[in-house]
Length: 364
Image 1 (spheres, rainbow, N blue to C red):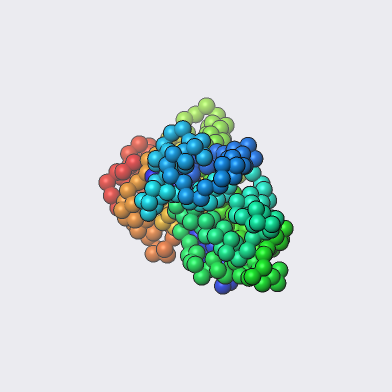
Image 2 (cartoon, rainbow, N blue to C red; image 1 turned 90 degrees about the vertical axis):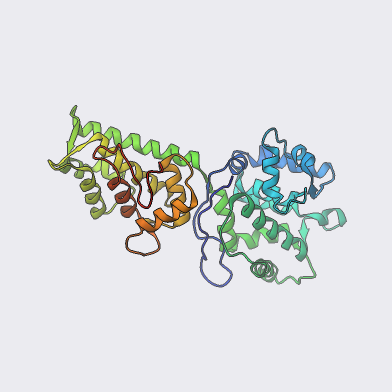
């Protein structure tokens, strides 16, 4: 099972190819397990015990289980990191994703990441890293999140080297010398791409959290409908359209989007019944919670999450592709929220009780 991450596109200039979306959506148990941990309470004590026990880098299954206090799904989690089937996992990789996803301040996470690789302290170089150790640190961060979160971004060995160079160049330090912890923190505070990479996981959102937020908005909208209906089973379309309380619940919808929603809801007599009201707004709310950058458009990876939440189960990748192609009617390569809601609601019965999604028979 996997954690589904959104596309990570280039930020800007050469070198800034890490991540442009503000967060990752975590869908799988291992990622949610890491996210539920607290850096200070859970992760740092594990690091301390690991060091006290000799800081073994290549962990076999029993050592992996003992080091990270795992009670269940130990083999499943072990295989996530043991992608080569060697029977060992890199402790650095586990610690990196553990730190990045755990609850805690970014400053504390950066400090913890550095401390994992502070090998020099036992050789007389306190709180400093050489160029090779910095490279290992960045590589471990990238590898770990790829394995746990399946991050899609073009982070090549050359790009990793570029950022390591930039760290040393920022302080005018030779590759033969060492970077201190304070120098690393100073560089991080100025390097936008590094901040974006860490922030992507620091602000990660679990699939259960998105479901909870969608339900919260659904309830708010239901209360607005009940107030407007005044005991009736329907609301006149013009009454809903003019409701400021309802408009405020629509994630900054434009006037044309509001009128499109009303048109999808109303019957021939201009009435909007509660079933249709919720049938139209549920996919609208799901879209907006999954639209990570607030652009009003989603790509195919975000569409996978949309369908997962809407259908309440993970969809086959081929179905996602077929659906995405069918819904992207203008061929733009992205799907806007109006296209998404229109495709969902037009596949329903009048009361929202039947469904046959575009591109396939009913999958939900």
